[in-house]
Image (spheres, rainbow, N blue to C red):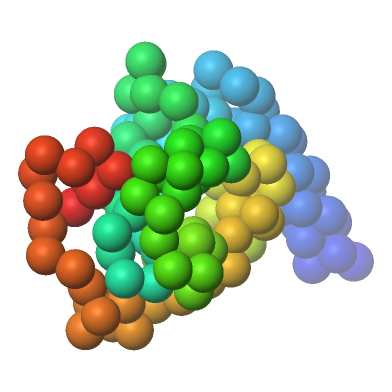
Length: 130
């Protein structure tokens, strides 16, 4: 009986913490503070790479940004799809809103699979962050 009571209390606290940490301003602060180096995106040959830093003036990745890259550079069809370079961890409750809003639109691909096909890094290219 005591174990059930403590387990129920733990679940309530976990859900409340998950809800509060996913409020917009709280969430962006937590993502910037704890996960500043985690969220990266790339296409198959790394001619498009994006590093989300969750800064005040930084906008998250969007389909419009990807479409602009495609219209400017006209990459091959296989290089038009953008992948997320991070795995989804459901235990990190402060990332849930980011996962549901942004991450679900992108398939996962490991950087180890992309790096051998990488085009040389060009700091002048505004679509290559790393």
